[in-house]
Image 1 (cartoon, rainbow, N blue to C red):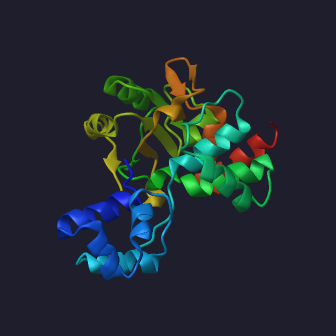
Image 2 (image 1 turned 60 degrees about the vertical axis):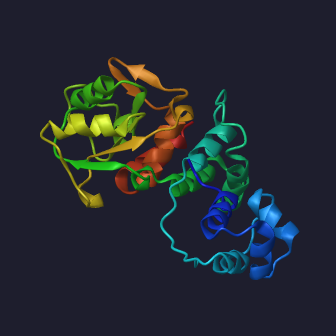
Length: 249
């Protein structure tokens, strides 16, 4: 669950023991402005946030990282996939952003923009694995963990047979990353921190991600548009192949 700016500022107040009026005075902002920040009615500037933090006896630091937001893919699916039900109130901003990032409403550019912003391999808690594993063994791990799961990435694009090796890079979306990771740890695969060695990425999927999944034998696959988004996010040959596939739709 993401913590809002209002929740963060409220935590500063609690830790400092200050009431809102005193914190506002110390920060040099009006009480009404602080109230709107606490209730998430406004997006304060970094400068204003830092003054409030200092008034509460803490400091504010800013770091950056490559974006990996599931809402970007959900927004693209809501715009392009008939019947997809998006989480209410979660993706409105991303729909607007995607049009800006894609510089229009061309479907290929929209899914490309969503791919750049969703980056499943960079999701918090994602596990990277290397080694040879069959599609059947990966599917077995998904089944044994319980809950929802679906393959995407290279496996979703190329649809290998159960006994064939999992193509790189395959994404296993699941609702229980920890259990799947424990099951994989008992096999011959091993973890890696090098992107160029990843064969399989195990990533937590929100409930909406599994909408539109399909089965091919014993294997569950994510919806086609989700597969294309994931493949585009991976780059390389699989991204090129996914783009060509999307252009035939």
